[in-house]
Length: 435
Image 1 (tube, rainbow, N blue to C red):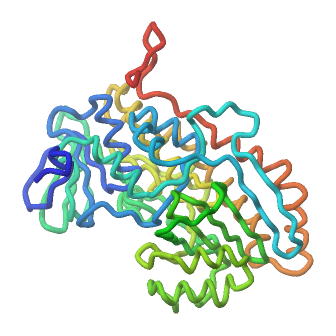
Image 2 (image 1 turned 90 degrees about the horizontal axis):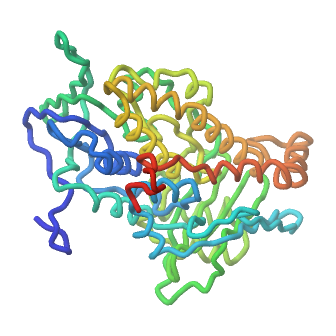
């Protein structure tokens, strides 16, 4: 089977066999595919069975429809050698316009601030486009679909390093020198390691993708609308597609709507967001029903990231499996890309897989905890506090409008310019693998 360009695809279907692999990655999302590609770029795991990515679904999934990649994500994509494939498809935007509906006051922010951005700028994109850009760079057979992890164990032969032993639900047994869990918020690998369960933020988010076949005519900028207990936003991805969201304090209607697109949309337009501007409601009503979701916002406590068991021997986690966070700073995907570069680099330099895993976790704990804390604070404050009313709610909103946006938000925005570095050190001429 070949793709449209005649190249064999990077995936296969599952079949019950015993498999030996150098590296196994659980999950073919952003973290999993980026980690596989980073390892390939460095030649890590090239021998002895190579890198194998296990995905429980039958194809690449793009839950969330779209995402925004900030400069730190582009630094990582550049290190992975795929940034050019996406910058040519998606335009950058420079500003965010935030309007408080109760007062009508609008504040405008520039993402670049005083920094020189060049090609490294803020770009929204289709999530599936990012997944495909990463997957296209992997060798045929790297991704094994319909492969659901059933159990994890470790074993150690005399005189040999500890290895991970995986059993899939179809009976397949896989032995691997390294196991990397990139299997999302409810990660099987993180549970096996003993990391704490993600906690509820008390907020939920509706996410959608609006489609205008004849063009939407919207300005290329992020628009946000704040109201008591709500934060809504929209940003054009292309001339025809607009990504939009609504973050709310969790309400019973969410369970009642379930996964029914019609009920979710009706709740947004007729109830929660009925007082939003007409242009926002028009975008919501143009939603593609296949890309509409409503889900609680979960996070792992920063102290659990700093102190929790994120590694055991040759086993570790990356992306949402390591540090799930609320989307309020758009850092979930970007931080996963950072993880991939740092983890592959650590494994390439270490004497043993366990040493590489330990080095990676030590390097990532602090930044990951800071991003989780910053995202939580940013969302809580911008939304006027979660279920905070009366005088306390008024004080939170006052803090938001006069202190947070003016002084704290620029500091948080600086974290979006973090450069995780190249996969390899520059040589004597200052060049890296990607030049």
